Length: 261
Image (tube, rainbow, N blue to C red; front, side):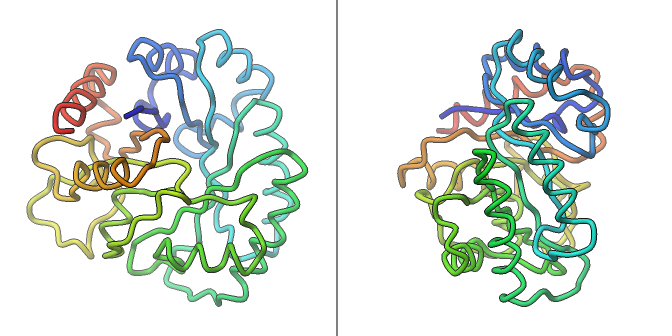
């Protein structure tokens, strides 16, 4: 298997230090973000591209366009700006997350958003990574629904799936779509007291032997089914972000996952 690193796995590291740490861990695929940390607002895309090239890493995605499935207001302009940035910094894809506040979004609206976004991505040579969110309040919870919408929008050549082990578990989705999957986010939940439907991003830690999300089983299922892309660490818990030795913590989790496989 191949690992990748999302900058949220070590958000206190500067962009150059993050890229360097990835290389020292033997990781060549990285993800940058527009929230924690907000690389897009802090760095010129040409500088980001230069830092990545110097460190020998590839920027596989930018996280994330939200809420991509409600096409209106300032979203089209934000989508174009993010796509321009991705193209300029050498990123390969944009992660696209659905509305997650309890508001229902119709299937037709989802399809319309994918159709509108398709032109923006295609003209810049980018892949759109649709990431269903498994939270009970999410407007798009399953990968099966995402695929149905992508096909309805004629987006088979533009879009692929982000398989997130946390959201896969929360949604109760059992089917895997290796041929549609372009990138996988991995994180664990170890808190024994939180119910599945109450799990939040703040519970997401690095994967270890106390993981409740069956990360190893999900990873094995994807690999056995033919998925050959990277597995990117995306923990949101503050105790991970504040770790004194984030590189060491990641190395330990990488070794655990590898050993289990």
